[in-house]
Structure formats: structure tokens, C-alpha cells
Length: 137
Image 1: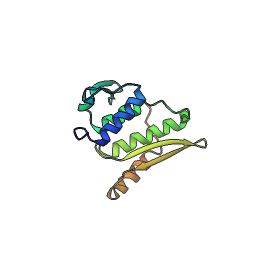
Image 2 (image 1 turned 90 degrees about the vertical axis):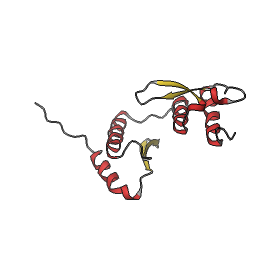
Image 3 (image 1 turned 45 degrees about the vertical axis):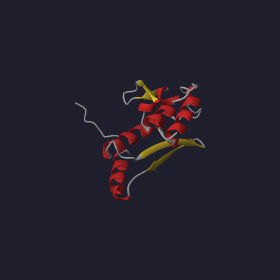
Image 4 (image 1 turned 60 degrees about the vertical axis):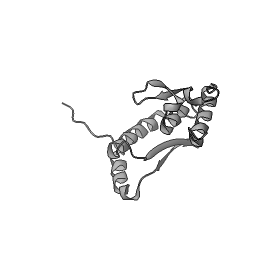
């Protein structure tokens, strides 16, 4: 257990259930994990070589999508806002932007913004309200 840590092993167990696989018996390090890549592809890596972030992404990718889907108009607006946040915050930051559907309404959750970055968050939100108008011609 010390070799991989409790959190990694717990996440592996969650992944195994979601992916309907059995971890490699004995040392689970060789257990293949399907890790989603930024370009949408999936790369297979042994558990021992995966970071916690990669394990979490793999679990999320294997879980069944919920039945409730965000309306198309909301999804487009959310994606525009997500892109605005990505432009304003460096890729390594822990700012998270999540959506949920409750009572037919799309809800946003933004977390992990350092207090000294609140102004940057406000800029990102304002930029994310309206798509930029492009000149035609």
C-alpha cells in the first residue's frame, strides 16, 4: 500500500469498477489505465505510471454519463465561458469550472480561485458573457 498510496489505490478501485476490469493481482502497477488526452484520444498507461490527475480523468471518462444533459444553447454558452477562463488562467492553475443541471436549470460552480486572482476571475467572466463580434468583410 505504501508504494502507491491510499488515494491512488482507492482511485484505482473506483476506476476498476467503472471500467469493469480486475486490477492486476499482487502488485497492481501493471494494470492498464485508459487515460484521456487533451486532443480527445485515449492512451493506455500502466497504473504505476499514472498521476493522480490522470487517474481521476480516467475514472471520469469511464463513468456512464448522466441522463440529464445541458440544453444545447446553455452548452454553447458554457463552453464559451470555459474557454474564457482558460485564456485568463494558466493551464497549471487549479481553478475549476463545473456545470450541473438541477430543476431544469444549468448551474455553474467555480472554485479554486486564489483571493489575489479575483480580479482576473471577474475579467474572465465578463469576457465570457458575450462572444466577440467579428467584423465581416
